[in-house]
Image (tube, rainbow, N blue to C red; front, side, top):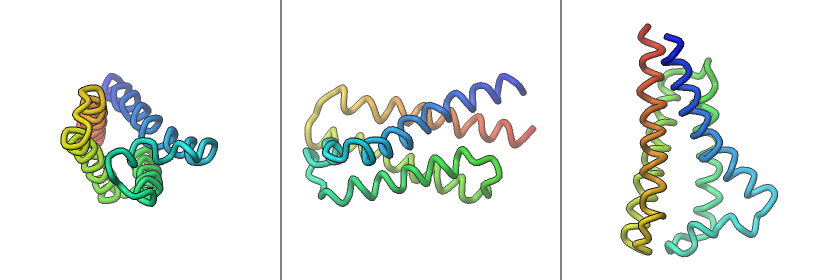
Amino acid sequence: MKKNKIIFWIATAIIILWEGIMPLSTSLFMPEYVTVGTRPLGYPDYFAYTLIIFKVFGVLAIAYPKAPAKLKEWAYAGLTFNLIYAFISHVCVDKNIGFMLMPLVFLGILALSYFYKDKLTSV
């Protein structure tokens, strides 16, 4: 039980930092860098701001222990779609292996968080 909880919170903390805090802090403290990742892929500027908003809401739903289970499921699904489409965008547009692998690494961490969330609730 304790091992499951530790693995869940480490994986979840990485997701919170990468998908929630980093984008939010960039938009607040360095707004000129908000669209650095999306503009070269051909997305409009408002898309980057929308991503930030939904990533922050997603990690809040995942991290808040009393959030309804359905909300957590939607948050995991939304972040999963985000990472899958980030991978696809990099494959189709810039073909940079580093940019392609990064979303897959975080998708694996997100899957670990999801898997151990289910282990915690089933005990």
